Image (tube, rainbow, N blue to C red; front, side, top):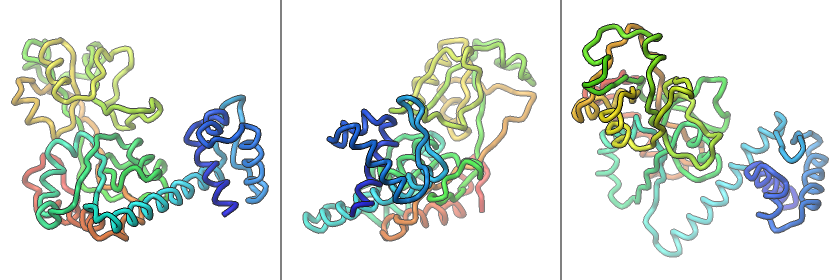
Length: 308
């Protein structure tokens, strides 16, 4: 119990980023929190933190402990939810976070069988980007994250990554733009234009989507989190817009024109991210299985390459 308490305080310190903020959240004094972190390091016989003025950063031991601290906290929350559900006969719940490439068509096509098989499950679907989704998984704030699969060197060991399909970006402009109807637009021409960025809202600015279409910051005129707003702005301005390939039909239907580029635009894998503990729950494991099996049967609805 003693170590568990210190590990919880360590997790709170990492989440809050400063001793002052963490101590306030824990209702203890800052000197007490400092002493407790020193006790934890002494008990584990490894350094956990680098202290740089008011800021902190984690050692390799600290990074590992933080991941496990998140798992401990998540298991505690799941235990309380399970007990509460039994006590009050609550409907079971599945919390899913997903990116634009999922939420606009792909997810709902793949989960049809699941919805039919589990009509009593209450599903909560949130918008999120890859980095946020991984952090929320560790903190127990969602059951599954659906988004871009990060490269191996940027993956978190506690998280399972299952690629489902490969996707990429398509570039669009209005019918009034000089690029409309032109062939083989090159990178130099693209670099001279202003852009609209479509990205998810984030409560923390350091969680930026690693797979946003690369645009120089000085060329960004509009930064929006709504697909409809992004398309409307592209129609009314001379700005270019990069959208996931799954939104191509919607963009064309709304009146945008696809830009014909000379250079190939890189693709990337997107899929399911989850922790092992969700496999303990039949309705959560079945959602993963349904998505994986459904991709084999529904290749026709998707413009992207399905990974079989």
